[in-house]
Length: 123
Image 1: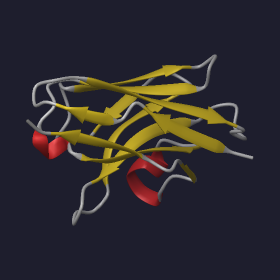
Image 2: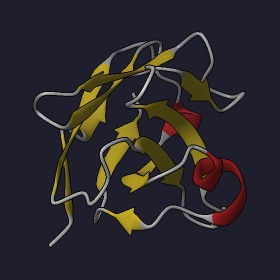
Image 3: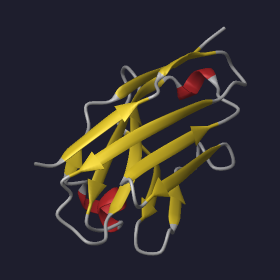
Image 4: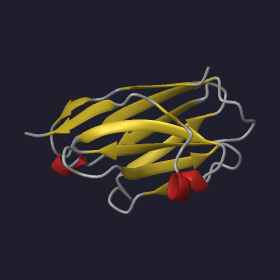
């Protein structure tokens, strides 16, 4: 069974950093895309970052470019989201998701989702 388990969420002050982890297991593909989405109360879900296991290509949402970095440990099938220079508007529940193709991140939706980990940025 496919499982995506997020961890690392919490409270942090503006300008601070946080590192989220997503441990994936049971993925049915040799190559895959894994990424992060977030949803704040009253707002639609937003794509944050995505990475391809085949070539390491990365993709970022415009609001986090230059501040967030997605990394993938292929051996551990674990994706990380390094979040720096955090702002109050980054407050949201962050979800890890995966699909066979990067296109799912942009166009048709990821196949598998984790339960999410909350991030709160406030002073």
